[in-house]
Length: 134
View 1 (cartoon, rainbow, N blue to C red):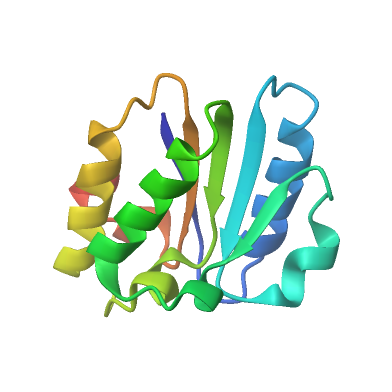
View 2 (spheres, rainbow, N blue to C red):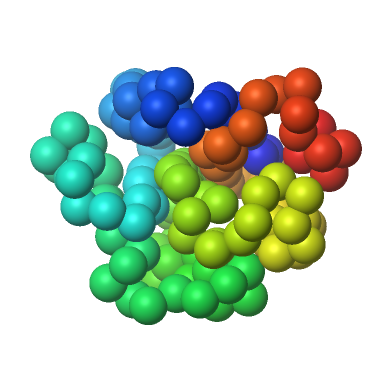
């Protein structure tokens, strides 16, 4: 399953994502991952969650990000939740209508999302989201 957290920059998406990730620990039987491009939020994410700063891996574009996500999932058989905060900034795309975002999301949809719950934060209002995000 892929879920989205929409909102303008500074609207509290990251706080909501952190709250969702911490709450998911109460129901998760497997691992929870939280990907962000800054260490700023590491202290607010539970220590039971694997926090990954994507900037430490010099990810450039949707193909490298997809490969990185697949690698983190492949390295741990019981990943149940993957939270990706600041996705547009990590992908370095111009906005929600950028092909890079569409390509990344379409690739994620091909994964076995019955067993893995993806939650992606997107910097735009829900009514401005393109059809491929709905």
